[in-house]
Image 1: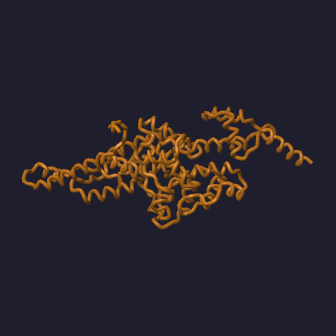
Image 2: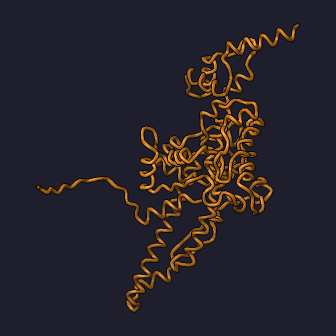
Image 3: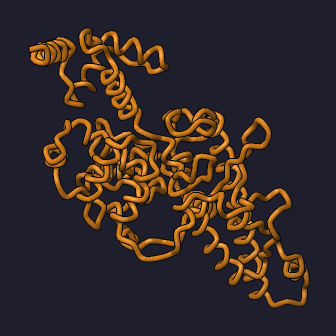
Length: 406
């Protein structure tokens, strides 16, 4: 028997301590960042905190803040927290009524405990409409993913949010690859304290109109400005200190520099992302939720020249204070399918009942409004909403009119 030694090269991503810290700082919300920095300040003598800059922005009057930001810290159930978030979503009364029914059926882990068909029958609406609102709920509330049907859907939701495509591969394979690339996956939406409320929402950024333009200010009250302590830094160059002490000081200084760079990078990336969102959502900021334009992670990533997974980490678990209220950044990345379905329903509700619009006519209206959509897609969404075709709508309405005349 012969033995043969073969060498092969395989690409493998190894996250350095600097990369791990940078990813952690980028992902966590501002209040967690504040806690993390407070610990570092206690443990690392090289770090010093500067006061907020003169350009820092805070609302002068607390009344400027919407009621849900001024809520006192108290214990609330997951369902109560979700209900309060549903109240401020840009939805009509009908959609909110359906979404609140969905929330009532979410258990303490964050999964939907009944089928969407059951909810549809209970409310007397189309299952497609309930399904669209369920998916919208998953993307628009915190903890994100609430309303998922099962573990597999929730894992897929997390993977796609981090920029990993699950088509053509098993969930297990994609999840393994994601974890190797530093993505943290949790087993259910309420993992890590979904039943216990935190204190009031603290925005990571403020969007303020100055003159005719919108300006983005980071929340410097909780995003500290750090510098190196020069007194301790000078100790490194003294020959009288012990070798072991010198090595300890070098490790601490390296950690301090890593932390400063990570926060600087977080601030830069967060600002660029929010500025890109603001640029594309001026109508929403000026006129309100009715003028909201759903975005995708891909178009924002291309605009700010970042990887889509980086943008996903930036918008995760972060809030922005706008003239229209406080919104999670994930809100701006609504499911476009849901938006189109809602618009199709609005068009059909307002159509001439004696001459209902065909799917082709609806597609043409949507294209004029900026939606790139085919007739067959309109037909698919219409069926999912439980709305019959134009011929059946016309026949049904004609019969109703005749009965009224008699």
